[in-house]
Length: 180
Image 1 (tube, rainbow, N blue to C red):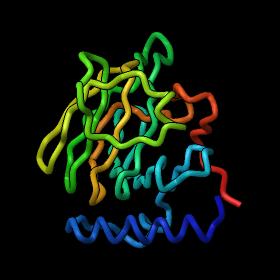
Image 2 (image 1 turned 90 degrees about the vertical axis):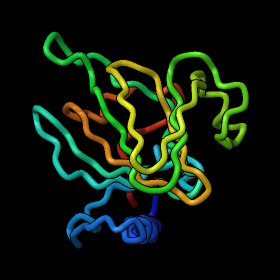
Image 3 (image 1 turned 30 degrees about the vertical axis):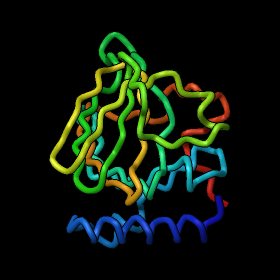
């Protein structure tokens, strides 16, 4: 991804945050992670992330999704005997987010996923999160999510985040962004 595109996406995400009355600093905007997952399809698969805190005990983030942008299917595996994998609570702050987890598949899901990405999705139990709704995902649980038509903002509260260890079902994904 080119630096100009990163800056454009940070500006778009900042606009959504402002519309939701979520206050952030210039430093947080300038350090916002723009994750394209190495797929070069940021409009469909991507995420903009502000990390407030990530230490050896807990993590707090804002996840910004542009309209219909999705975070691809993944899980947070066991790390060692002392870390069973990340447990995370998603709380929708603005917009609508479709969260998919393990469980009985929803017959007519709301997600709109391009065919090239759909083949890497295996969990279709849908939870619709609107402002004030929240859901907790246990460690090592497959999940993915997509914003509705207006985009979405989700606050994530979790145990320590080790994103580089996430396991994705799409083998082409590179979790850590490459900026040129």
